[in-house]
Length: 227
Image (cartoon, rainbow, N blue to C red; front, side, top):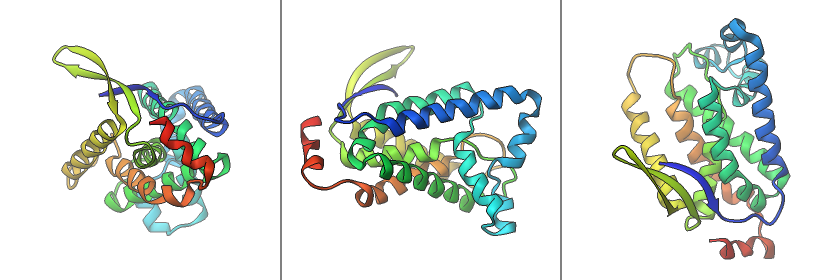
């Protein structure tokens, strides 16, 4: 399934979400400018689990953990991540507030990266991408807006049909797919590809952290009108 928008208006302008999208795109433009040197750059500043466990949590590993959240492996990788962030991030920022949303986004990214490091401790492949942070946003959205309608393309054979589905179904199936694929990948040969447990870890972090970061009071109670 491919979501293209949600029917869940925000009450505030999601400046942080816009900024995160711009920064991710900016980093990708920088990556393109490196050309053939990109692989070496990923080796230096991408997050490498085996290096993390050898050095302990030293400053270089902390920096690579943060920087890797804004790097992407290609146009499709960037495009799919930014699409999900565009659709779901604004409502989470609306509920948390700008500053808390930014901290939440980074916290989910760190949790996602750590989950990847634990489940792929011997990997020497650089891990890059905003997927872990965005998975946290999806987890928060599932908690806060389970009944919000999401306009989604659904593949039926060779055709795509457009339907409005509850976020509970769209995001729930997304997580189930990540979980089953991630478990199936355990013990397999190391190769570049999708860091499934970064997605799983980020999503679970979003589920667990959302109540800590969500605003309370009259403003938050208005959520019921947006379902």
